[in-house]
Length: 415
Image (cartoon, rainbow, N blue to C red; front, top):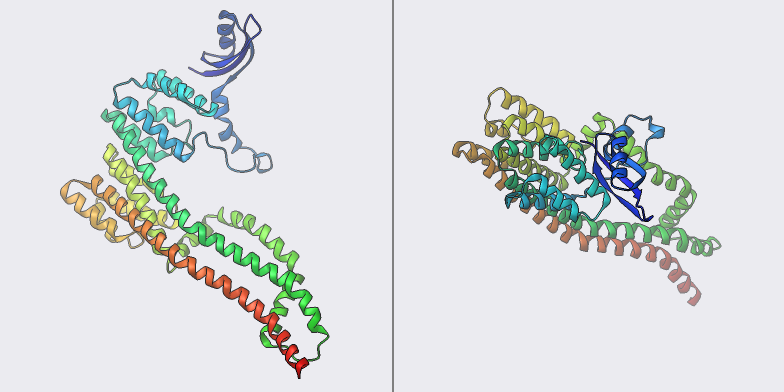
């Protein structure tokens, strides 16, 4: 039954707002009048939920700027799954669990989402089907695991496992980003300092040297030429800096470009192995979770492939799925796949032989996550002093380029 959000006035003139279920907006108004309320506004929550999907069908000049806003952030989704799993695991019925969670919702968007999901579940839909109204908040991999858990009667336990797995991957992502944040900030500061010195400090000193008939040192000549080039080409450089992100986004919309960039990213000397281990950890986490929930292996592979962030790896996994579809064991198909981390093939083969494939895949995910975290922290530890030395070296070169001719002029004056 549809859910409506309403605003109404009581007989005493007090404002009331809330949500109710009714067959139509007209029926919702009749229910409000039967309660002694004067309806001011009645709006279907289903229409609001479909607004983001309808925006994709609009012409590009009428679409909203930026991606649609999520009702649930990544951390809020983990908390949502853990709360629902705990309530169901304690024996509370699904409908009452949604009532309890909606009462605790701190944001109106989350409360509306819970109301829509509860309405579908009360109408006879499964939880996975009800969550399908919000594909951005609940990806296909999670919905597939929930659907399998509903059939197996282990919904509460699977929701808790989903929450634990998502929390582990979020922690890994945050640690990797934190490790890369400091070097990125230091690099930007170093670049800003160098540009500031070359465009504001060096030009006035260059005017002092212009009246001198002596030959300037090579370092000073190069620095003056670089300063002059930055000042002459400053508008063009600024325009490129502003336009480059837009051009990059336009290029990455094309599948061939995304494929080439992702393949090149995986082949970089230091970052490539780190990215390969990270994507393999995500794949193992999702695949192990789905198989453990009872999803067939081939369907689990297809769903887990969509969670991999590299288009090049997704293409390679399509070949792997074709081999599994023809009857090849997962471990053997992974051994023929050289783009994924080799640890996945080893553990998958052992898991198939021992009948513990989901547990082995989750173990691979944990080990690779620990390896990615260790490598990221080590790389950040090595980059920090290197970048500081680089910034100091750049400033030192600029200072030497300025001071060397001044020292030479002082020597000539003394002579």
